[in-house]
Image (cartoon, rainbow, N blue to C red):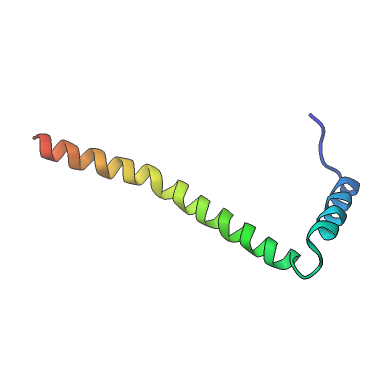
Length: 62
């Protein structure tokens, strides 16, 4: 599987700069970071919700 080297990253950054402009890039990066943080938090909470729901169903059955 090919890896992304420093030259490829530079090309990607230049393309992003041309597409979005210098003023929009920090805003775009901030929104991507916020979205990733929310997704990570939701994924961490999801298994706990499933266990809590299963336990409450078990208590109702008993």
